Length: 157
Image 1 (tube, rainbow, N blue to C red):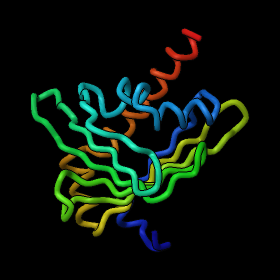
Image 2 (image 1 turned 60 degrees about the vertical axis):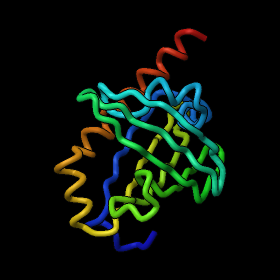
Image 3 (image 1 turned 45 degrees about the vertical axis):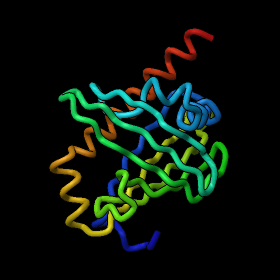
Image 4 (image 1 turned 135 degrees about the vertical axis):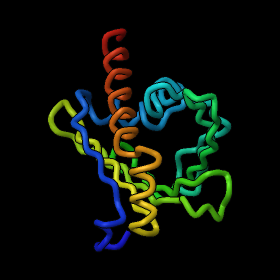
């Protein structure tokens, strides 16, 4: 990603109350991911998930309005417990709404600083996603659900 992307990106950061390895596992293992991925009111059906460079994660998000939203993630870089980079699209390879995402996991004692950075092709597309898709709120709700899910795992172990 270029260095001058501020007007085209959304950055959401959260200090997760869990060790980095647990947060990374929750983010990359389907048996965890299925329990928390997406904003409140959304559920998912996973079709395939391979978290490795060139690997694909295809899933259908089911919205609270009974609408389905196809998603496809193609991983470009994976560094266990540290970094995930990918391109996120709908089912169409030429999706004009595609964006590049970088997720970093930084250990801070027994907690993890999680940063989600999404870079869009244009500032207009970034602004559309913020306004029409409510992406910032959706991202924050997703990370709320991640923390809640991790809390249940830690309680049950």
